[in-house]
Image 1 (cartoon, rainbow, N blue to C red):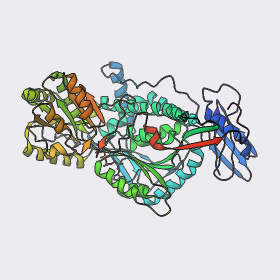
Image 2: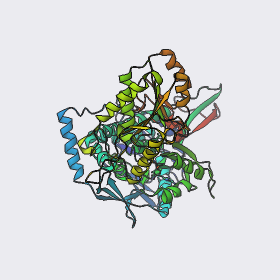
Image 3: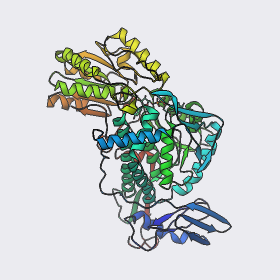
Image 4: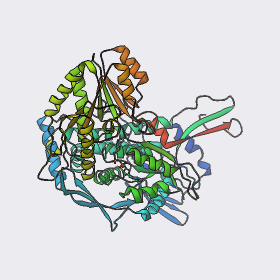
Length: 607
Ligand code: NAD
């Protein structure tokens, strides 16, 4: 049975019909809160096809539909909310203010007293426990357990899929205004509890205050931006109306998606892929990274507080190899939204391409993968600005960003001076527990530390070490690595080609812009890149020829802002989905064109 909910102010009116069809009416008294749309009037006009329920019981927070023999209770707790004006990026917090520093310290204390709690799987709105558990740890103090989570296995994939399919019947037919309201309400909740979410990020993945704040701000931005984008998409107009026809173009949801985020932006990327899926009417199975499931569990709590109906997001921590594979392979999975490493992305791509018995579509994959990002520094650049940009982009969050600058490609006349200034600047960077807000915290786990140290060993043979190069011993056993700079590196060296995902900068000397450009384009990746130069002409050539999804001119290559810098890379960096841009939501929809011969039946009122 299909069910739908339309809300006007506090009131709901529901219509159900047997089978999967659904219509809802938005009629009701009171202001329309800006929610009356073309779609709404189209839905109302088909009312005569609906079977009405026998009785609808409304109360403040619940709507019960009594339909024939069945009684179904739905929460109708999504309070309508309209976007407040044009989209604007959430302002960053100024931690130089004594008051905000006090608030952050208080949040760390508060969250610190909640570490080690156990969280449930949530399937179809029901909370479940499993025998196997996943624990997440504070990478600065690995003996500290941040959260204990259930370990979903392949058997839970089927349950989660059934719950998501059932919820899809309702959610895909819920108005876009209500779906957008969910996101806007969630944005407000996160905004009000910003410091608390920053503190969770500090404990679970080792972000210092500024990095945590940027992750939280981006989460709010995705919620605000995608809600507006969904409303815009719902009003898409067909470019041409043929004479004698009503021609409509509509973007409808795909179905059930598998959302598989990484740990390094465990709030923003996890939330961004999830809410882009659901605001367009899909339902999802969310498998967070095993390094950062707690921040995802906290986000699910936010969505529930904002009124998320059961089954729309099914929260299933689990291993990539068992649960991840199971949801990617499932014949009813319609799309996979993945952000992570190149190798896992390629594996998902291959697995998703294989037709499974009972599968009636080609699975769509939205795959955002790794990077090997360069900054070109030309002799005519402002060298101090370039050094600041390179150091910030190479060592912010210990280089654990897909956009991190891992190669500085430097013009010969300023090479020695650049190296010296970078060395001096890096010597001032502080490394330590992110709870006390140093420049750099730990890397995510022991395996990452071992892999990065191995690359540093390779790099010491491939170039000349001028800064760092060691793990930082500490009593707590945290995974700290010194900011490391290796110079005189050849463009095809291992550390100049492979993603290290840690605080390691390779510096490459080049002779002029043509060579710099060649080197900048010589990896299999194509995510971000930057160039510093005082020449207009050089910037113009770089704009055309520097082959990356996100190019930055005279600024650092990290810190993409939602709306201003739609984000996604070329080549092995992924499918260039451009998160936070005007095309992103299209990836979560399919376009349906409907052409009606006018005059064949009475036209709708107003058309
Ligand atoms: P990862 O590839 O190891 O894991 C990403 C996610 O995939 C995790 O949730 C993991 O559990 C899951 N997974 C692993 N194996 C799987 C499988 N076989 N089937 C299904 N799911 C599976 O990446 P990570 O270490 O979490 O994140 C770091 C990587 O992400 C880096 O390469 C970084 O460049 C990339 N990244 C890219 C972007 C971007 O926008 N392009 C953004 C952030 C991070």
